[in-house]
Picture 1: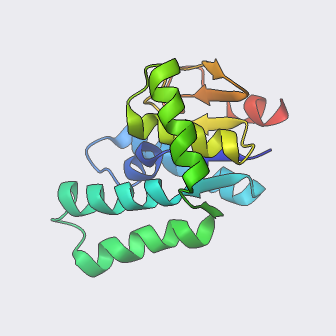
Picture 2 (picture 1 turned 90 degrees about the vertical axis):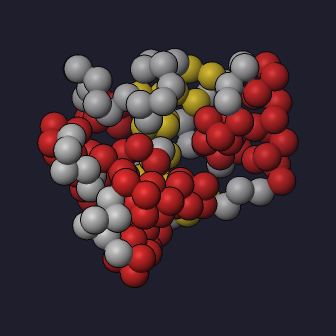
Amino acid sequence: MGVLIDTNVLVYSLDADEVIKRHRARDVLRRLEMHRVGEVCSQVLGEHHSVVRRRFAHAYGPSDAVRATERWARAFPVHDTSLKVVLEALRATIRYRMPYYDAQIWAVARVNHIPLVLSEDFADGAFIEGVRFANPFADGFDLDALLEV
């Protein structure tokens, strides 16, 4: 089972101001890496770098920000944003009224047959065309139960 990781999970793993979310994100990412089920997409890596440079500039210089993003690119398989993903995302903006970049995350999961997306940006428990969404920061989040399904 694959699990697509959204940008916010990666970002919270570095956020000193959000201690509870930082601990949760680090635990989830460690377990996904250990079980070899985590996956990311090029969009997430680009967003991660942008957020690290903007929000954590005091702690991460330009080279540090690159290394932080490269770490995730080495830790997890990376899916590119193909034309098929873009067209599927465009369809989702109309059919499900998703903002484009959220639709692109969903489309990467759908096109690559990844059944689960971890993100706080989607309705927890939503299921759209074979892709389920779970908020790893929600009360009651249980990664083990999700991985058993």
